[in-house]
Amino acid sequence: MVDVSADSITLEMLREACVSVRCSPLDVINTPMIPWSQTTLPLNNPCNIHIKLENMQRTGSFKIRGVANQFARRLKGGYFVTMSAGNYGKSFAYACKHYGAKGKVVMPETAPTSRSVLIQSLGVEVERAPTPRLMDAVNRSIREHSMTFLHSFDDPDLITGHASLGFEILEVVPSPDVVVVCCGGGGLLAGVAAAIKLSGCDHTKIYGVEPEGACTMYKSFIEKKPVGMDAKSIASGLAPPFAGSLPYELCQKYVENIVLVTDEEIRSAVSTLYRAGLVVEPSGAAAFAAVTNDRIPDTNGKNVVVILSGGNIEKDELSNFPD
Image 1 (cartoon, rainbow, N blue to C red):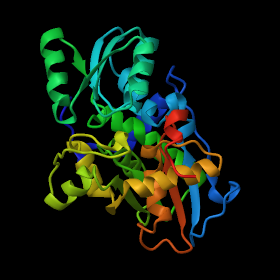
Image 2: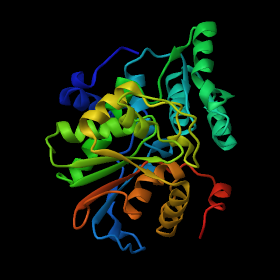
Image 3: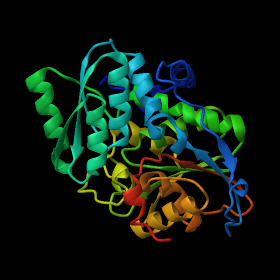
Image 4: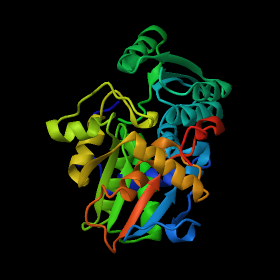
């Protein structure tokens, strides 16, 4: 990965990446964004919630945006390795199949088996490893098989690709008061925040949301450097072994704060969304959980955008959530 600083990420770079994403042969979707009031379930929150439905995105999550930009800037037919709890791996495998590339995904042992089965069905190899040893497995693959590493959250092409989501938000709500985004390694949060702030929305407050048991960016903000932890959460997609360096820099520059939610609050959010007719995975529901549990300050009467970042959850998994 080429070293890139937060200050070198420009609006022009983000717009160029957005064009790459929208023109990608991977058929990335401009997903709907609707007011919560259009759903069938009332909420008691005193703000105007708008939900961005990335659970309806190609491959079931926002990850395809960054993947589309990564593959657009690399030679076809390569041999790539990455690490992922599932959603990035699924998009990565989808892209490998389309571009005729060979691929391998290193997954944490805690990730649902159904995710690895799906990735393998797309022709990509899967290796499972303990979360703290993921990078060791990646580095071994690079060393022994000359694979090219595509980072699932700390890569400038990925982050600028995710910025396309930020631009889509502004097309519907040109001047949001608050934008709430889930945060794992920080790639999505960094890309969305950069797109919104560099587009001139200086007043918009952007918050990242992490589970209490997987709060690498929250700890990084406290320690003022990217840190790692033995992350554990029902939201496995938000439990990377460490926060990304470039995402950390961008979040420091453009994000108001990182807030935490409990696994139980995430479970409840998944159930609430399901009752409203929306199938959203735990990782995709974290931002919604933060809003509905009053973790975001000063939202009364404000236009609040919440990203539902993914919908990859199996029917048997949904049975474990409260009614």
